Amino acid sequence: MRKKIVAGNWKMNNGVAASIALASDIVRRLGASPSECEVVLAPVFIALESVAEIIKHTALELAAQNCHAEPDGAYTGEISARMLRELGCRYVITGHSERRQYFGETNGSVNQKVKRVLAESLRPIFCVGETLADRELGIAEDIIGEQLGEGLEGLTADDAAQLVVAYEPVWAIGTGRTASPEQAEQMHAFIRRRLAAMYMLPVAEMIPILYGGSVKAVNAKILFSMPNIDGGLIGGASLNAEEFAEIIRSI
Ligand code: PGA
Image 1 (spheres, helix red, strand yellow):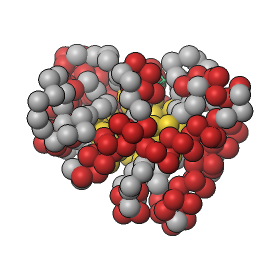
Image 2 (cartoon, protein in one colour):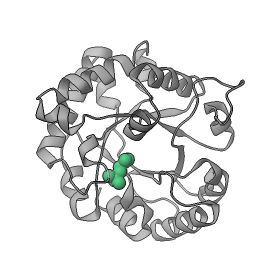
Image 3 (tube, rainbow, N blue to C red):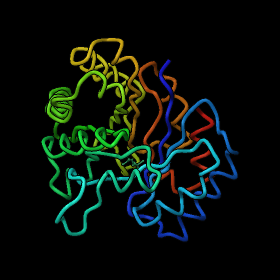
Image 4 (cartoon, protein in one colour):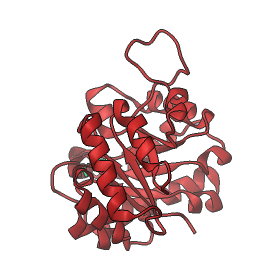
């Protein structure tokens, strides 16, 4: 059975003190070993070390929101996957639509990052998602297929077994507009079929596919009950410990 995962992407919210407070509150609500599902927190870079300390004796895991594709070098302002591993990260979010939209990331550059994350024995939370225009043009699956094909290019089946994929329709992120459970399930099933074509079915069956985009306590249960939805990547609602804990409990 694939493991269910609920990951909180705090984005550029919460400095060190606020991250410590939020992580502590989440741990208090969940207890040391939350449930059958894996719980992952992705604070800003500068809070990673402090949050790592808070979740040290719990089953919670740490994720970074981005990394550079090189292990080190003259890349002012960047942070490498190797450095993130040193801080206790287990996951790195790669190719989030906000990175693609605002920071010019492409399928090709995301591919470099995914490979580096894997090379450092970390797990990529590899994000894909179509825009509203793509969906209205009826090319959503083409876009996702392209993101999978180019973003995961060159990965072996062993690499792929380490992946977590997050389907996040761009039109549902931070908009309060969620894909319907059926819409999401349809795309998750498509992603699984595509992964099976790339890496064989047993590998595709192992890869958790998370849904992201305005997940809240009120809609989490129905989304997570769909056969190919293995949890969520939660933005806004993960900034509230009570709401986030409620989402986790609905798995
Ligand atoms: P949201 O963000 O839950 O605020 O829509 C999800 C994400 O971008 O990961």
